Length: 163
Image 1 (cartoon, rainbow, N blue to C red):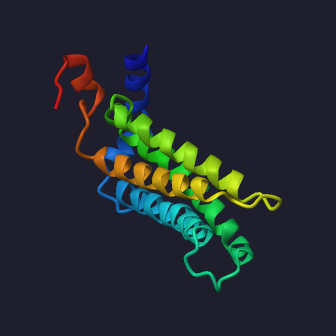
Image 2 (image 1 turned 120 degrees about the horizontal axis):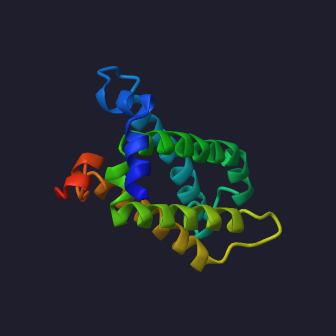
């Protein structure tokens, strides 16, 4: 069933455009958007968690609330660009265990961000450390995806050609 889904997805016009277009607006621009979204999301969240851990104590923790809309905008940029990147190379991602590890770390980091940012709650330091570790894990797993895949496309999968 996964193979038939991958065959369909890789044959869509968008997937073909992502893989084959020489345009800077295809894969390179979407990857750049994903990186910018990650910088906003993880960067702002990690800065906030470092403040929770006592870095820059002169900066009021409430000041970080001004950056929350940019952080959440980064999340939505990452969701949109991540779906686009997945559509471009679905077999490469969906047959790699690290892809699911990355998604797990991202989900945990976003959940922790929501929990820790509740205005009625003082964030425990342990949750701040755990949140930073989740972002480090998500970023590391995401980078390793480029080098640890088993199948580049559905043709490799169907032929059993592991890379």
